[in-house]
Image 1 (cartoon, rainbow, N blue to C red):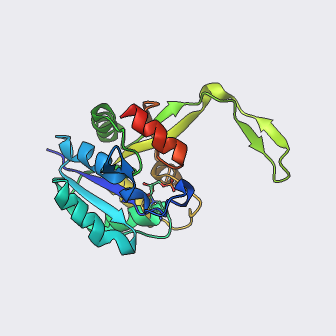
Image 2 (spheres, rainbow, N blue to C red):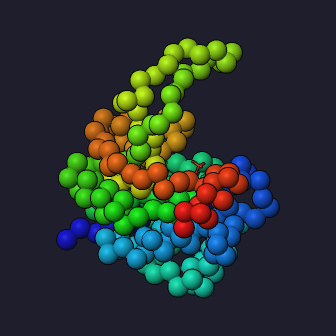
Length: 223
Ligand code: C5P
């Protein structure tokens, strides 16, 4: 039997949302944003434990929410890092050696489905590393610093990475131990960096990341 830990980075500043409230606590249909992702993960029979990263000043508040909303399976709320990768790294360290699979899911994606949770775990077991992603629908331009187009990329082979991303534990631990990729904005890029092949699970356009006020409105419509 494999044991899976869900790691939830929720320590972002939420500046792009343009509100005073810290992003995890912004209300979405009357409930704090981060509780949606946590509920979805704790309800999954494939998840055995959850570790959340909150910004240093919000650890206590998040623990309070977890109690209030009766979110099960949370092992720890740890202080996040300066970047998303730093936050995930702190969670991985806290997980120790108790788990075979780590599923990483942004606290800012409230609409994750059971299909994405179980599907990414299944592919991580089989291939070692899995990223949920959706096909690109816009034409993508590579821009130069002076804002002239350098090149138009081939959309038909492009995917936009989302979360969940799932990994065999020893792979993601090793990927995170290697220093020198501060620019990476997701976990699977680090797995690629140590030479691992990453399988894509086709995700859903519903599984948006709440970054701006528009996203918040959209999430309200989709929920
Ligand atoms: O910055 P980005 O929008 O990619 O953030 C994705 C997720 O990473 C969010 O859930 C955010 O709270 C989290 N994050 C974090 N620690 C940071 C920055 C972002 O846990 N320092």
